[in-house]
Amino acid sequence: MVKKYGFGKEIETDAVSEKIEESSKSELEIEATTDAEGTHFTMELTDETAVYGLGEQMRGINKRGWIYTSRNMDDPSLTESRESLYGSHNFILITTKERNSGIFIDATGRVTYDIGYTKYDELRITVSGGFDLYTIEERTALEVVREFRRIIGKSYVPPKWALGYGQSRWGYKTEADVREIVSGFEKNKLPLSMIYLDIDYMDRYKDFTIDKNRFPDFEGLVRELKAKGIRLIPIIDAAIKIEEGYEVYDEGVKNNRFCKDKEGKEFVVGVWPGDSVLPDVLNKETREWFGEKYKILLDKGIEGFWNDMNEPSLFYSKQNFVKCINEIAEKKGKDLQAEDFNHINYLLSQLANNEEDFKSFYHNADGKTISHDKVHNVYGYLLTRAAAEYFEKYNPNKKYLLFSRSSSIGMHRYGGIWMGDNASWWVHMLSEFKMLPSLNMCGFLYVGADVGGFDGNTTEDLLLRWFALNIFIPLMRNHSVPQSRRQEPYMFGKTEVFRNFLNIRYKLIPYIYEELERCAESNEMLFKPLAFEYPDDERAKETEDQLIFGKEVMLSPVFEQNASGRYVYLPEKMKLIKMKSCEEFTVTELEQGDHYIKVPLDTFAFFVKENGYSKIMDYIQK
Ligand code: GLC
Picture 1 (spheres, rainbow, N blue to C red):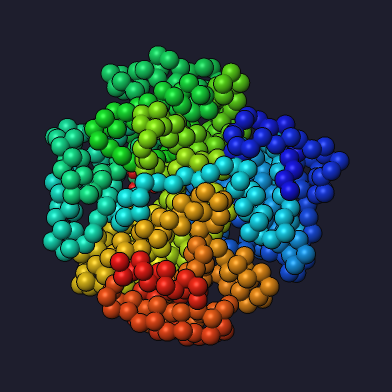
Picture 2: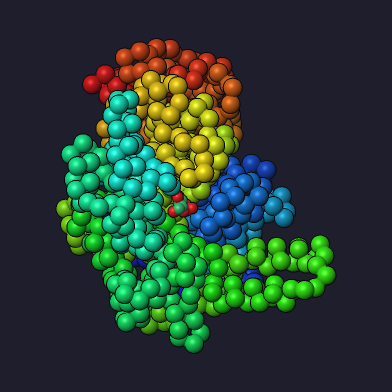
């Protein structure tokens, strides 16, 4: 059962698509207090209480024992100490043996979840600003999730080709670079469905432009690749370069499309293009205008996009940058000491994504002037929604590929997400894995992390394990920074193993897509923690490095370097399928309980439940 309680919401987010009447606060079972910080909800946690959800966050699937914040942030250090990442997904599920309850906070500002961090046995949620609170009570964890997903509306499903393998790198700069990648895949007989274009395809990082020198015949290239079954997927960033004569900027200024400072002037920020302005996507007309800009690329045959820097990410605000440099300049000629060094370092470190900056620019949210900090968390969602709503107008009969870095609940109906700037670290494979069920709970089904790791140098074994991990993950994209070692699958020695893994993936696409569509239709999770599938099994409850995929598969990837196998826990009798290729595989039946399984680097291993075996085999052998 779902109940809604109003706490003076800032704006209508449309996160919930079902119309629900408000209940009287006297019915609310959770203790609520209000002070200068905001509204607090406090609950007791017993030893056996587990808390799930929160979508894109570090740490475990069970979120107990840490403090998490919803504050969309571009900060690439994805470590255990982080309290927030790029998205804010305000849904949690609290489970005990007796009770399964969900809480959704439909807020646009900061929300903090202290889940046994300050006090081990207390959950304390703090919401700054106005919001709607939804509570959901159902018999099981899965039913709570289903009910939540029902009220927030059907999840985005991409076109089927978007389940293919995508090759990306911040560094493919020209038509020649793209062709070189295609030929690398062709020569090595590696399947490829998408090549991603990072910011270098644009004319000096201006959205919806193409650098004519680098891509003299963009449309021709799109056509040529499409004939080979490969789509070009360009990036779109949130900020618009300030440059007179640049149509998007000129039009935006003329029609008041950008966020303003308190004097009503465009608020100037620094992102990739240098001085830029932010489209005010809190405004419906601006969303329509911004969305329509995608036409420029759609008309050139583009069928998919990735939206980036839309937290929004600010390297600096112009006003703060100038202030900071002036303060540093005052030190000139003085006897500089360590404290000056530290102070300058500090000043510079405070420039990016500064909360004071978020307070000093404003939106026109369909008539209501509101400062950015109060609605920060929905910016990325609304920007991506702008694109999706335009695609629907452009061609209502077609599915487009669309995913975003920043998001909040509501956006799950419009696009997928990738998990931002991870690194070539073994632990980031595990983070990707653990975020899958948490994101699924919040409606995001088309998700994935940068395979191989974005930052730093990958290794062949890491990349192989990462490919194996992603075989069942809908978004499978290899992406990396320009300074890193190249990580296309033909850059190492074991090309044949990469080829085999990709061929297995392609065999399974019809199955994965079918499951994805089914889960979107029926509001189910594609990746489930064992705890949800086997709620009475104490061991299953604590197993977080294995997941149930769809109805019949269990995944148990290898997450450690130099490990040629791993321990698995089987909550029921299952078949272990070990595949070297689609032709060469073994099937072993294993009993419920603990097992050590050997998984050499050239092998993809997964489990199927008894009832799913013949179905999966049919796909593999088709
Ligand atoms: C951001 C994105 C990354 C991209 C880079 C350059 O860091 O997260 O994927 O490559 O910007 O556009």
